[in-house]
Length: 439
Image (tube, rainbow, N blue to C red; front, side):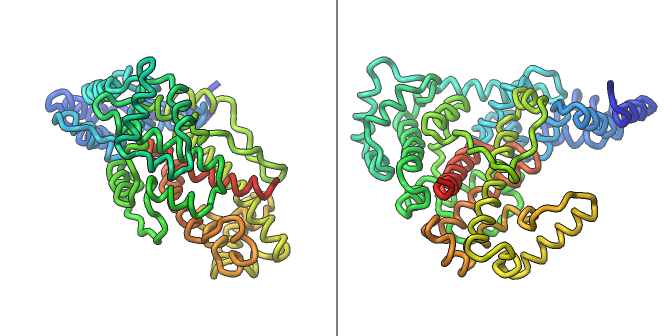
């Protein structure tokens, strides 16, 4: 039975008699066929639609089901998708980084609905299908020839960089069951796939923060060692973020695959394996059963990324707290946090407990951006963390690569395939360090 909040929202919506703003918005859409950005702005001006949004938000809160209005909000908040759809209308090339999110929306059935922007959505569907059609699986017996061409095109340094054997790359290619080889740029696909598999091989066989691994990753994922001044558009615009990654040195060939092939490649590389379970005292709340259904319905990569980061954060807190307690005692936060950080944690703890939260250790009030400064503080580094991470620059680099993804998943924004690769690589590195200590 619907709850009282939902019933009140529906009742308030039914009482609204003035639907003229809504009618004007729809008439404007039909008459002028405005680009998607202008269309959504026109819809948003309507007070009736605003109330409808609030009603559907109440529905979501009471049932946990992601509705069409939430999808519209994704489009409205993410200017790069709007720009991409406008570029499709203008017959320009579609932004590479939007292909993953669009494929995800197609799998969720969003393309099958009938929204006011259905023309743009149909063009987006055609663009995704056109991109997917460029890819194929190697024919029987073709793998050996491709590997020979790969070596002749001077890509053998990729195998050397990650200490990978050609035979393991051949096995990975033969394990693929979804089209991944670009018919137009075969060697580019080979290089991107080989680099993904090489990263997975290195993280399985070498220390995760060994300098040779960190140096190799900088070639493919970019150099993130210097402090970064984050421009706001990096967190809200997929195209701006892609440009930002490429300017740091990220190799776009790593993710330039259809979504199913990209994710199967991650699995074969061993980059998407489950995090270890959390121990008592650090366990996550059990997710409601309906969340699994919601994840299946669509936009699941963002949900899965959020879940993965949340679990990583719980493991990090436990790891830092245990190692610092072993080295400096249970009151280590009072003496071994960077300037001002202990007061910030204590203030958040005090406010939470005043609001009725149960008492928790002060580290429970750390922000994601706090972990690298705690680990890299000179005395903490020297006495505790240097044996785990090798160089503080590599720690800062790892957390900087995760920072945009952390913010997007916390604010329910779509993530790209570039983000997903960075997420799985850095989570795997950090978890490998934690598991090494636990063993």
